[in-house]
Length: 249
Image 1 (cartoon, rainbow, N blue to C red):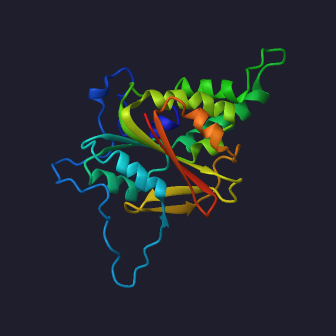
Image 2 (cartoon, helix red, strand yellow):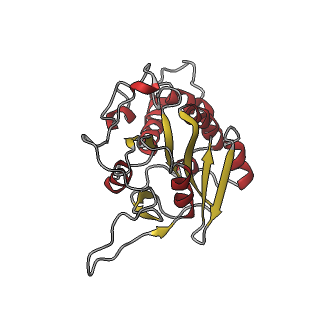
Image 3 (cartoon, rainbow, N blue to C red):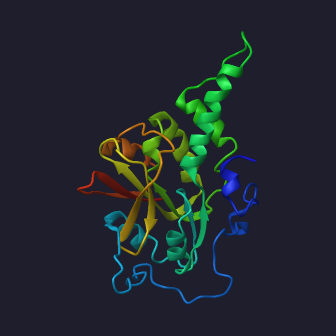
């Protein structure tokens, strides 16, 4: 079992139809839906509500507002705040810690190289070839399984050629009309961070130990090329050197 599959609570997604996809997180009983743009709740007295205003999140939620009971894939670390926010709005939420899996895969690739017998054929260690080997056993979902994907800043931590291999796979399991929220740094990040959805307008950025080193700072033209299969896109650049993009298939 691959590293990424250890984080799944559902392991029956490969070779199934989109209708058969079950959720890792969902309500066991009917819960009246909460509008996507409704606040998650006010802090109690004396409690500080941390967060960063996010135009990208606001646009992403607007794009998926009318989906109703949809499937959402979060490609970051499991966040109870994010999961709760979306299941309260009748989404089924799946999580895949893609950077943790990618980092572990690269470490295994590095450790494997010295152990190869002398004179044996060396594997292709180009970023594209490594991405192909990773995708052979990871991110295996049926086509058009998801209405929404939280990609976060995953692509910043991949070589550009690797990212070009990942995007077609991710695109394949987004339904027509579905949306992706992606974040790009406008300069090399000084701190590895995770993202949590606090409410309809705010993200929490959580510094954590570095899993993978940043690889590339994407220009807007490069971003548009990566998402060329999507029919619409909108980007927002903020003062904290983040470019948020919402891409609708």
